[in-house]
Length: 236
Image (cartoon, rainbow, N blue to C red):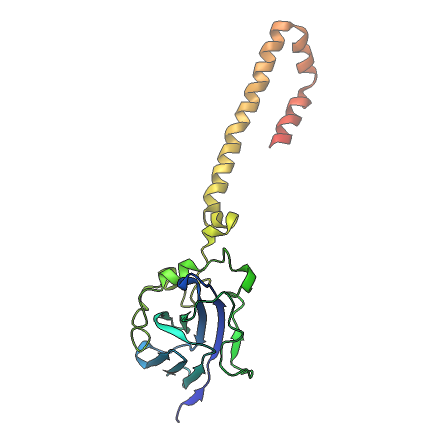
């Protein structure tokens, strides 16, 4: 029985810049699970992309042809292949602040193409968007007809084949950056709390000693032991 031919799902997002080429690109993800590298063909040209990959486990051959809305810079684009998909960062050739109005040259809607909301940011919200790690970690240029520079890609290779979190560097997201070490921090906080408790008892003993020297203070403290216990409970 011959393999079926399938059009893979494609998701995309983009960034734009009129001054910085590294911030002027298209994110493209081709979902083609269980396609080994040796059975994958990727041909990227300034105006188009052709992809073909065979999966023995899925008993299918994925085939895709895209004609882009505008030209891309092939030499400075990057790719990465995982067991689940092919990830691409395609640099736009023209530096421009405005987004492309769409990915494809033709305006008609195609069923396999969707917006990648995990990577998408609005045009006026690009400042501060976490893109540097993904761009810097994907390694060299296109290579292969497209796949030669894929071995790098920084933290994405070890993320279970799904490309990680879209290149997000959680250290850039304020307080979220400390989540990975929260266990150790919490333990340190507990130790600090434990260290503070004897200090409270020491304060009470000091108060007792002071009271003894004054006579009347001793009687007041001994009459109200609940006050000190209440203070400790409140702090703890």
